[in-house]
Length: 112
Image 1 (cartoon, rainbow, N blue to C red):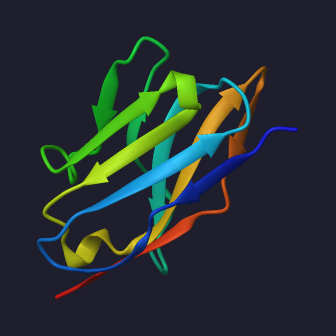
Image 2 (image 1 turned 90 degrees about the horizontal axis):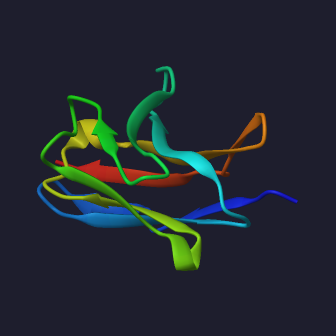
């Protein structure tokens, strides 16, 4: 069974930081963090390849950092200098075989 379980969301003031974690049940590829704000489409925030290459949405570049710990089957999203517009449900996604799998999401709320 393939599972992705996110944690680390919460309420934070603008300018603050949070670190999200996503524990995956098996080694997965194409790991990434996505987010969906109310009334908006889900969007890519950051992703990391099997070799550790990273890419980011322009809106979070220089503020967010994606990383992974292969030994723990965990991918992280360090979010600094948070803004109210970062408020969303954050989802972890990974691929295994020919399929993509999603976690259940974790809510991040940034107050102004």
